[in-house]
Amino acid sequence: MVDLELYRIFYEVAKAGNITQASNALNISQPAVTKHIKNLEYQLGATLFIRNRKGVILTESGKKLFVYIKQAMNLISYAEKEIDELQNMYTGTLKLGVGTTLTKKYLLKYIKEFHKLYPNITIEISTDPTGELKEKLKLGMIDLIIAKMPKYKESEYEYKVLGKLEDIFVGNEKYQELSQKEISLEELSTYPILLQKNPSSSREYIDSVCHERNIELKSIMNIASSNLLIDFVKIGYGIGFVTKQYVLEELHTKELFEIKVRPTIPPREFGLIQLKEHVLSFSAQALIELIERDN
Image (cartoon, rainbow, N blue to C red; front, side, top):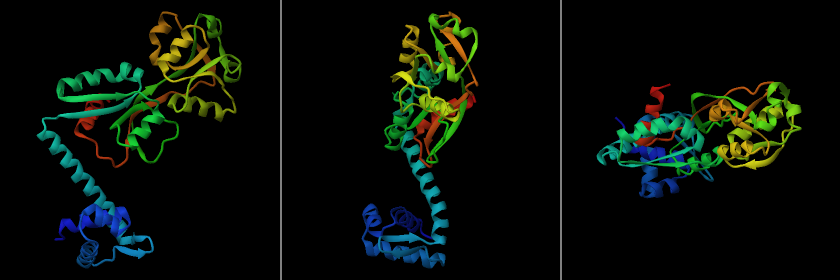
C-alpha cells in the first residue's frame, strides 16, 4: 500500500504546479519533494508530472489521480474540523450572509432552533447585497449565503433551492386606480420607478427580464435595501419592485397596492449558496440540516 504522506505531497505539488511552492507549503526541501514524487510514480507505475519552464503540469494519469486525492484531502480536512469542534463543545462562530427581510420572514425560526441546540455558537449575520456577499464568501469572511437565486448561476458556486418568491410592482394609494387593471412593462416604464441598486439579485433579475423584452426600466432612485425601498413606496415616491411575500400585510391593509404587469414576472427561487468543494464548518452544516429537514 502506498504511504498516504506521498499522496499529500502529490496533492500540494499538483495544486501549486510548482515544486518550490509545494516545498514551502510542506516545509520540506525541494530535493525531498522530488524524491517523494518519483517514489510515488514508481509505486503506481505511472508518470504523474511533466516539467516545464514554469514548474510542473499533470499528465493524464496525474489528472485522474488528482480528482480523487483532492476529494480525499477535503474529507480529511472536514473530519479534522468536525473533531476539533466536537472537542471544543461546539464552540465557534457561524457567519451567514443573508438579507434583513429574508432573515425576518424565513430564517429567524431556524436561528431560534439552532440557538437552542447549540447555545455556545455565536451567530454573525452580514446583510449586504448578494454580489458583495459572494465576495465575502470567496474571502472566507462568511460560511454560507441564503439569498434569492441569480438568473445566471456561476460555476464556482453550489446552489440549493429552498423555495420560491414572487416579485411584483407596488404603489401607495396614489396608484390605486392603476392597480385596477393590467398594464404592459412599456407603459409602466413611463411612471417613476424605484429599484434596488447594484449589486443586488433583485436588480439583476428585473434588469434581465426587461433586457429580454427590449425594455428599459430606469430607476429614479437606487436604494440599498428592500426595507428602505418599501418605505419610499409607502410615502408615494414611486412604484417599487418588491418581493410579494415581504409586503403581504401592507397589501392586506391596502397601504400598498399591487400593480399587475404583462407579461407577468416569473417567480424566483431562493436558497443556499456556497463555494463548490468548500469544506463547511460544523455549525454551517448543522444549520443546513435544520433547514433541509423542512424541505
